[in-house]
Length: 390
Image 1 (cartoon, rainbow, N blue to C red):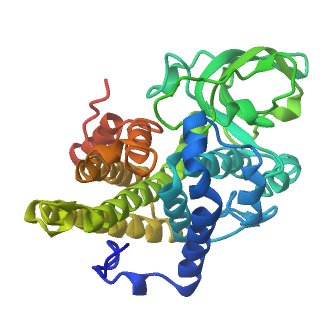
Image 2: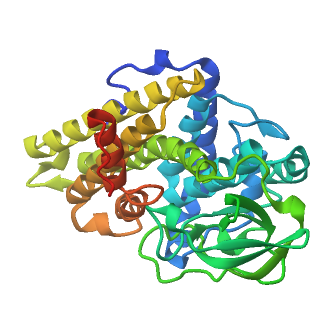
């Protein structure tokens, strides 16, 4: 910031709530984002891609599957992973999404539900960023209701044959391996699918107005033949992919705060420099009300995320609590981004400042991995005991 003002997250003096190791991880990731990511984001976002080679940079920093233990993973606690997600999304939601999909979806699926052979084969190169993964659950007609999926896997001798389509798959077109969930006679099963398998294709989704510094794809499976050992042996129900989604949502509820913090930092700096009627925009009461309200929501969201992170590290975190965290923190982050845009005026719509880019990204974060409506119903069911989904 250009003024002597206080950092938005320091008003409540939360530093003592983090361990020295957690502080160092957050600082290290912030330095990486400041030097290696932010200088390139305008171009990546405008061109609509995130370079695949960034995977090795993420891997070298220990960010891929960082909360998993063994197999080349860093083995940090959940709070450290959350803080890393916050710093990554202070760069861009697409950057955090890459790390989240790789570690909390693709790698976690293998880690949680895979065989020892699958773990040893895939997790070390994925942790290093040498192998990129994606996670195929959502379908064109089945997002919030994955139980209706049409992708089918059938046995043919000792092999499996997969047919179907997945949609809105992060990293799909650059992935080396896909975790694909399909309906079988035995229930919902997960499959480890090398993307060079005949019959597999991943056309990229273009003309996006959000998450542009991210590769989003369709997965097409047309008679994809896999050996028997391609199936994840540990689960045969929707419990498999839903457990993976809870892992990823945990990162989101921290990550969204990073986008909000970056917007607020930009708004404070801009309004402190920008002169209107002979004084800084930040010196007007209406602007200070906006800044104070946004800082308040940012700090409340951080305390909520930190509390949920401690619960996760104690093995006590429940899926409905993750829903509550994502519902609140993404909703408030988007409100902060929109309000910051008003402070920057016309400059707020350009790529010279991060605010509109974050706001556009957060529109996607609001609805992926569980829409706000779905998470509202999860919380409502927890409060009332009544299922309002159907």
